[in-house]
Length: 71
Image (cartoon, rainbow, N blue to C red; front, side, top):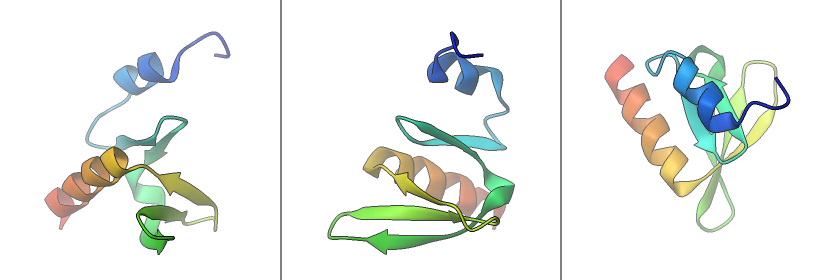
C-alpha cells in the first residue's frame, strides 16, 4: 500500500462513493458531515469521527458536485 500512489488508489475506488479533496486526501462521501470555511479562500471537511481535513479549491468543486448529485 505504501508504494501505491494516491492517484492509483483513487482510480481503484468507486468515484460515486469516494472523492479526492486534496492532493493528500481521498474521502468516503458517507463520512463527510459538513464543509466549513477555513480562512479566506479555504475550507475543511468535517468527518463523522470529528476529523478535520483540508479541502483544496479543485477538491471543493468535485466534492460539491458529488454532494449536489446525492441531494
